[in-house]
Amino acid sequence: MEYKTIICEEHGKVVVVKLNLPESLNAISKDLTEDLDNVLNALEKDAKVAALVITGAGRAFCAGANLNEILHLEGVTAFYNMLKKVQLVINRVADYSKPVVAAVNGPALGGGLELCTACDICVASDNSVFGLPEINVGVLPGAGGMTRLSRMVGPHRARQLVMTGDKISAGQAKEMGLVWQVAPPEKLQATALELAARLAEKPPLAIQAAKRVINSSGFIDLTTAMDYEAGSVAMLFGTRDCREGLQAFVEKRQPKYKGK
View 1 (cartoon, helix red, strand yellow):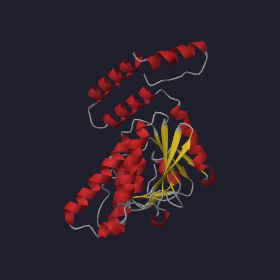
View 2: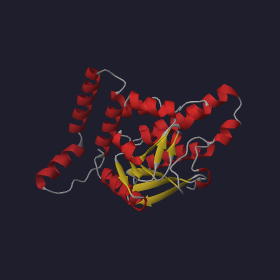
View 3: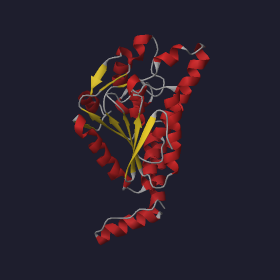
């Protein structure tokens, strides 16, 4: 299927989802939001796809919201409804049943940074920058920049980014835990694909359980979270994939996971 604002590229079990609005620095528009939602739906149903890489076309990852569209919104309710649609799609990335790697190839600002926080692991080119500049135009980030980000890097660092609107380098983003690995621009896609390919070979049920437990742990008390953790691990012990993994380890061979 073809999309107006996204290009999908297959690399074995990994699909690169490329935001393709380079003239607007891949700003989040109504069309991009709808296309990303449709892409996620299609790839989730495709059994041949085991992992995703999200990146941007041109010199940016994603420069945030499309301000031209926002200026034409009529009133608070329309703005709120737009935010909720963006939230739903970004939350879908966070809760996705397959691992998602962000390959940040340039500026990741506003909603672009929020999209990064929803991905499981983020790798970035050494010339990329991150920031939440919304305060500079009188608003604030509304799709995870004040919630998911604070759980990732802590409220103190989140306040610094939200309240100053300053940009930080890829190296600084790595230091605070937002980025896993920094690579030269010419090696970014290969680095992200290698990581995604490794994740694609992991047992799918274990990946899904890991995401559920980790994503929920910040919302519940420690005792409840650890009980949920134990129950999830025990459930995995009863799967065929776990038996296959243990047997492969004993037999000194690569396991073949089926997601069962």
